[in-house]
Length: 362
Image (cartoon, rainbow, N blue to C red; front, top):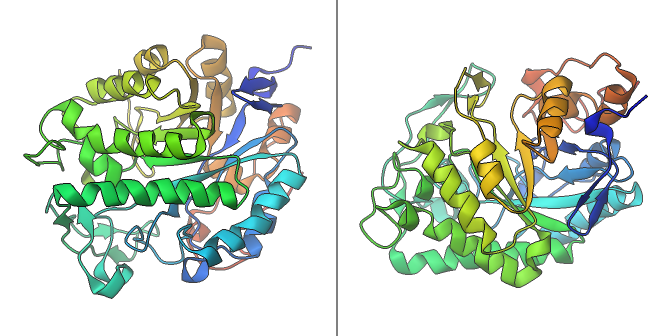
């Protein structure tokens, strides 16, 4: 019997993957004091298979990058050292491990900022209070201040140093978080960016800062170790674009110039966290324009993942909630086994075991 497409091997740059089921980056909020914890060793190693590809939860690039409790960083020596045993555990199990590097921008509160200062963004447009994922508590956001033109190189440098630190921690590469309404997305999306300098206005200007980050990171660690995640069609954290297809296509073409390893695009059907919608849009134009490896994510089932690979609309598929709840997801796909149901209520709770490392294996 032929292997299902998701379980066929794939050579992604210098990495030999034994299958195409990727652990998507998932915020889990269990890194107390922004330092990765020993319990993450078990969590990530449980989800590692020989030749599997994993991406960490979003990891802050600096002390201004945080917007949630207990999310990890990679800007201090202590954080770098704390990541090492986690990376080693994934490597010991034969996995390939990338660190997703992140700045939340305006999706923050002065409680999470150094000296209680205002969060930074492309503009001074604030976020309206939003229901948290438990659908009970309300998250409040502090109005941001727009970055001055001459401050932007400093943030670019934070991403560069975070990438260097990730390599020092032993990671195989980094994924730049350019999606989901966070800082880089706040520059790309015209509903947020109202700047009049060279970082605002035209599509080219709005994409300038994210591409400067790509350039700095690829120069620092090599393009063969760099991916980027983008959600042009998304409206996460009130960041949406009036022409998402043009934005997605512009970035796909611009990324070719830097020879990055992969582009990781969120499917157009994902409007924001937990919200899917019917759409006539497709990632195919971006997939066609981009010359590197293409990862698709967003609400995939085994069937849609297989279909995407057969049709050539993606090379590999990233799974989030299903992988969270099924540490042996590739094996379950292979055996056509039923999947554990995920429990949304424990996605972001700080418990080091419950809803984290206690999902059963087959």
